Image (cartoon, rainbow, N blue to C red; front, side):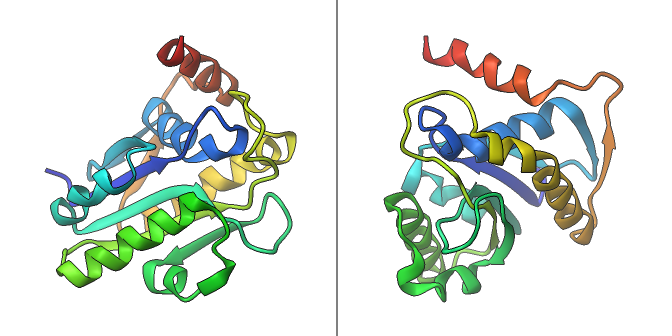
Length: 177
């Protein structure tokens, strides 16, 4: 079993809220990792993600962040920094993630948890796509993610055939229809 999990969370039905799920699928389709890591589509599992916190040494959640910053901004926050944001957590989704981290801490679960997040432009429109701003920053989001993994001692090798973000998004339609 891998000691690192990358978990993409969010709802692909609400525009940019799906960035975590799309990024996880993009990693899975386009990269090989050494040592191996587990890439998990956490979707909207919410508190059901808790069991991953006891199975891994390190968990990296991919998500949106609602901070008073410009859309497209990318942040890597260790769990204690996310907990310190207090009232700047504005979406129900982020409150749930924060509550999971707080509960994991109280339960003494072993994972070191961090969040790699991007400031969304739109998480309310019902559309299976990303906003132009988040699409523009998707490459930087992936590069930041690869950098975080490199800091954890994981090297990434791009596969010979690259699946585009557009193909990842379009491929997600089949799970809904």
